[in-house]
Length: 460
Image (tube, rainbow, N blue to C red; front, side, top):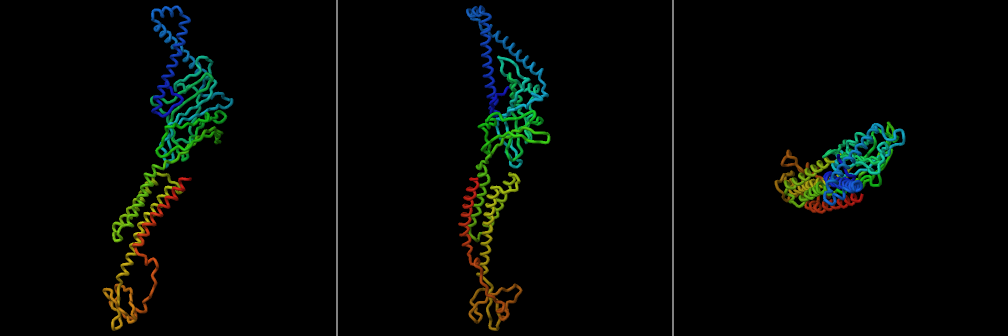
């Protein structure tokens, strides 16, 4: 006979507790039986009692009397169960044709695990207890007020067809025997406790219970008391913490009728510690590494380009791997904003050196332009190096010559093509100034972003 105590905890701890409580229960029964036998022997066989007390051999007679009483007691219980089953039809609910049966539900949650955002499901391990009244199982007895019997009895009596509407799959635990027990009292009240595992496949973590075939005309479910749903204090989740839970009773309307449904809702708060180590901290370090190029020599082209390209590729890989573990949703998540800003800063660091490279190129072109000077026969002659040459009016003439142009150009043909244009202001910025500005601007922007980001999302 498999017994299960009412107050069970985790699977490993439950087995030990069950054996201990069962041992104490059996011990108390033995004490009561022994007391009854002693009274019985002392009243009916008073002379024999006195004789055995004198000779010191009373124990043997008491043990034989106790064994006889135990056999008689077990025989009476077996006859009682046979009599109850003989007049019971498990195909018909109690009070058939009369008022609906009220089934009270309690759920003792032992573990919550395997919360997966991608498939939007989680696993729930619980003890589900159902309490209802079946007048056909009542009996009159002043000695035995309740019976705790094995799971084989469940197949012989009527039980509610309770199921979970939003389940993927569920299974019962059968180590070392089927984790279930049945208790019946002399008033016909039936208590059934079952341990099972229940995965949920929706984003909102809710547990829904209702009858599969019986409408509100036959069964009405109720949560049994204010503590109908209990979460074990040892429940621990790696990525989440249970912030709150509540439960409601409602009637749902389907095409086949109205059904009584119980719903329990669990609110999970994500633990930020895991994501700080796995996502936020690595992405921040990648951003800081991209700033190293601001302190390198501007002429170290390979080093600065390597840092910029490496950080951009690393940030892209981190974003891809992170999004692969999250559900594909249409809205923007807070993590997307953080990673997006980090990628923007890293990419801007690479563009910063591209801007410096352009300014350095313009500076080199300005330092060594192609020069021409006016000769005595009225033509411009190309110079290989810079030298002071006047065109007769004390001015230098700088023109752009295509490769196919001659080394000498008539002066009159050039004067008309000379245009004096003003340079834009940004062309006067030195590359060193860009690096100095970046050393201050990038860290300041990233720090302000952190203040706004955490100040907003931690207070939602």
